[in-house]
Image (cartoon, one colour):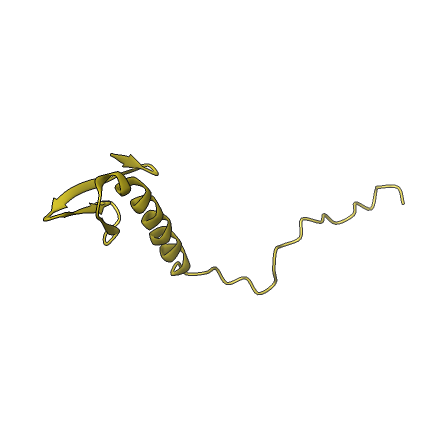
Length: 78
C-alpha cells in the first residue's frame, strides 16, 4: 500500500496489525483493525516528518533577508 508517497507494510501480529514505513525508520503504528491502518499511518507519517523538520539545523541569518534594492544609476533622471 502507498500512503503519502511512501510504501507501507502491514503485518498481522497476534490480534493486532503493525503498520510501518521502511523508508522512515521508527515510523510504526499499531492498530486493532486493518481498515484503520491507512489513516493511522498517514497521521504517523505527518508526526514523523514534523519531528524530523524540527531537528533540522537552522540557517544562521543575523541580518534578516537581504534587500534586493539596486543602487540608483547616476544617469537616471531625478
